[in-house]
Image 1 (tube, rainbow, N blue to C red):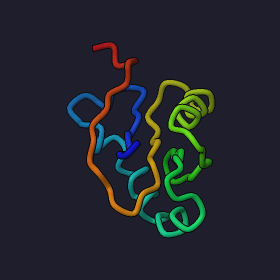
Image 2: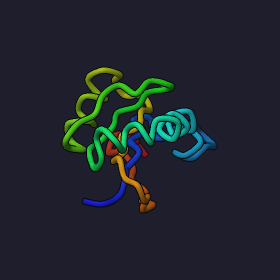
Image 3: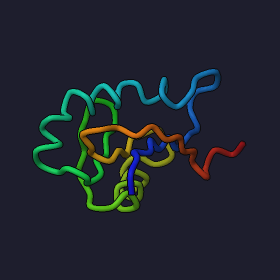
Image 4: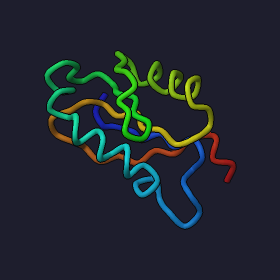
Length: 96
C-alpha cells in the first residue's frame, strides 16, 4: 500500500489543518528520514512531538500503539518511503 497517512486523533486545532497540527512531527520525520530509510524502509513509524517512538510492520499496529500510548491526541503514523505520495486521511474520532 502506498502513501503515508498522518493520524490526528483530535481532528486538529480549530482553525488549523492536520499539517499545521502535526508540523513538529513532520519535522521530526524529515530529520530522521535517512536513518529510517536505511533501517525500516516501507515500514510505519510512530512519531509524537520530537520523539520517534517505534517502527511497525503494519499501519494498523502503529495506529493502535499510538492510541494506547498517547490516547486521543495528535500523533503521526507515516510509511517510510523514499518518494512521498500525498494522501489525506481523517480519523473516525473527529466528532464532526
